[in-house]
Length: 377
Image 1 (cartoon, rainbow, N blue to C red):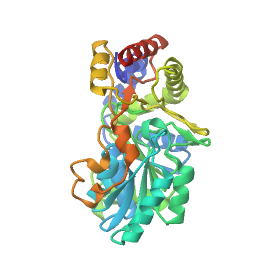
Image 2: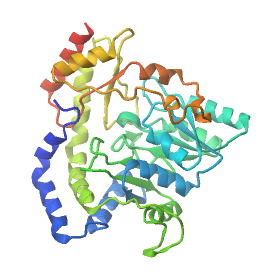
Image 3: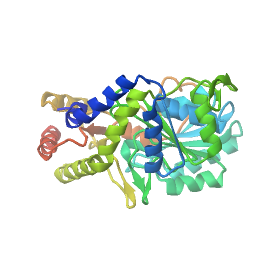
Image 4: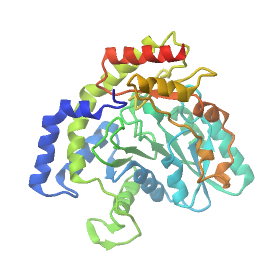
């Protein structure tokens, strides 16, 4: 069994993906070919924003967005403590200080109340200027933008939505990657919409941010002239081959893959309802793209032993995430290493992610749940 079965997905899409790749090979425009602009247009329309700018990966997407926002030395950027390293690495790489914020124990996403508490603390300390929030749509479900936006407006903070795992999710009928002043996603292969390599995208309604990001992506170019460089940028582009693959995968993503992962999540919910596990909760008004199906193990469960048992049954499991951000070695001994995040500490010790993808069958989910129950018993 695969954790996220990209081989099975390819078997379903083989003819159309092979044809798309062959078209790129025959055309020979491997960088900035027409498929890139075609994909950007389709993604912007889907998210409901004016601009989509593709780039080399999801981490670059965050970093480029923060660069366009003017984030740098002396700024505080508020990041959830329970997330992947890139969410905090990106502001730190620009000289800003990530301030880690605790999360809600049921949604796994940033708590608006804890965000405000962190902002007030930073303002009272007076060492840093509160500048921006990086809100992560963890495991496929949008963060609580109802509350987070209120905090951002109250304290004049810029908002970056890190939708690396959230593309396809919704809140109150509005799609992920449309909630921030700038929003980002990743096309890493295991993401809800993934390519066959690395890739990322940036979304915004702000014309100035869009123009700046397009420039920064190509060595700080001026307009369409890549040999007139007016600022220091980077080299971060989605290549034509990946764009062509994503166009084909995006079609079925909307046609049936989102429906299927939500169906699979429903099977898990039903099969595990008497298990004693704490199951993921999708609150009223939210819709998840299910990048992961993550449960909380009961107190006293030996996670490593349980994982080994599941592996012996041919079932892969993963731990997202085993260590809080503020305890990562890169932040220990810095101001970012000082954080009061008890929920994150507890989650890191008990979360477990189960196989999840659009091509799971009911029998496979049932088998996973039976083996998990056996391990728990």
